[in-house]
Amino acid sequence: MDVQRRIDEVGRTVAISGEGDESTVTISRDYTTGVDDLWDACTNPERLPRWFAPVSGDLELGGAYQVEGNASGTVLACDPPESFHISWEFGGARSDVHVTLTPLPAEGGRERTRFELAHVAPLSEFWERFGPGAVGVGWDLSVLGLSLHLETGSDIPAELEEWGTSPEAIRFMESSARAWEAAHLAAGADPEAVRASAERTIGFYTQAPDEAPGDAPE
Image 1: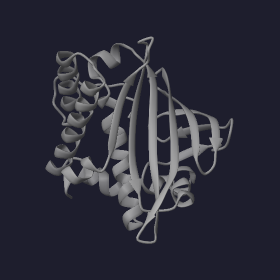
Image 2: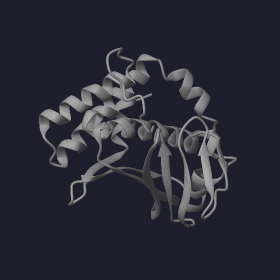
Image 3: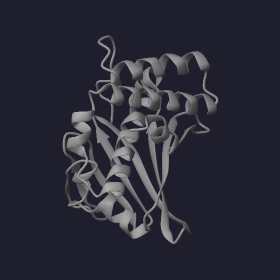
């Protein structure tokens, strides 16, 4: 895998609300597929395990869902095939995830669609310690799985689990954390605090033994 190319394929932004009490971590990527196919990949319970994780429950407006081994929540809004909004509840904390799919001009006769995911969460001690990378690296890994699934049609999670302890995977996660560090700096955050939170996040994702975001949403 060309790790840097995979990192560069993804857009990342960080924003803090005007009141200073809420963060928005946004990740985006353009895919060479139609909006209907991308919507199906993101919402079909038979397809989600092929790149993300098994998801049970009622995947419809007002329904409750459970990501196996991870978050649960409720489908708060759904506008197929363009967007959905879910609550994201993990470790006693509540945040929100908004996914938007936007058709793009075709290239070479091939359909293209932009995937954008915004994770909105209250600012907390967890954010102060680990910054956007704690959830951002997790979403980067999910976007990587989606990319590989769309490119190959394969079932990706088992392959990523085996890959996850390799030097290449460690390099990917550290590069992702550095990219989120840059996005955090671009949002105008204090450089010293940004660097410290990025180092803690890298420590967790690269298996350093000192400090880890044990209740990380991703």
